[in-house]
Image 1: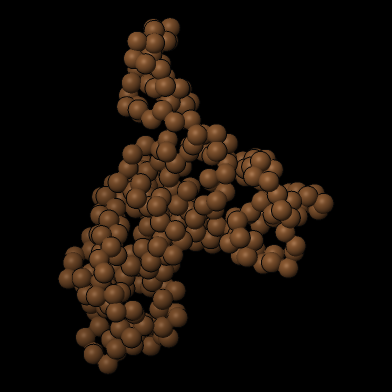
Image 2 (image 1 turned 180 degrees about the vertical axis):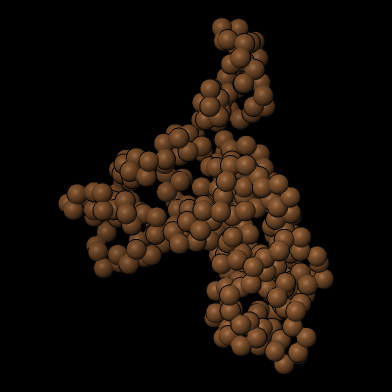
Length: 281
């Protein structure tokens, strides 16, 4: 029994009173009962499963939906577009296409069709995911995740800034950062980074601010992806699909099912430090 099956079975069992639940469990094989017991999952709502297709699509960045639109016949595209959120339609640059007024039931039906084309039928509903310290990431929108990535990349910048002693060269770097980023960079410089990162690939003392920001952002994505190693793959899927396809694919490329010894735990600590830092006003 895989995790999804066990979670769904547990939800159904949790809807029974303890006596009836015990009777049902008595018909199961010992190994199945053990699997269910190990879950420690006490959730009893089936709504997340019934409306999973709707909730998944509402969270997704519009860029992941572009290839899906091409799978529908031309005469149905208008219906599909009309079922998407205003933000997704705007992002897809489809504002000039007249939308259709659809009932909620029709929208749900179309979203079910879109969901099938995404080929993610085995994806766990968010509510069914194993508890994790990183569950907090599921509450973040794209802008908050982008901020998290940018601040993580400052750890890479700090390792290079430590080597520069000329104040005039440092000025170009510091003016490229927002005040809160500059504050966090100083914190990073006072900490020992256990990871040896390769150079950013640009002359940070001479490059313009846009290049510096791009380099920081890319490194932040790499750190973030490696910090997610060992987390449940569906949690990582949800996070990656809140981001656009470019960033999401980089994140997924860094992920692996098992934690990286001596690296993942350290990066996870950095992620939580950034999250706590960003909470401060």
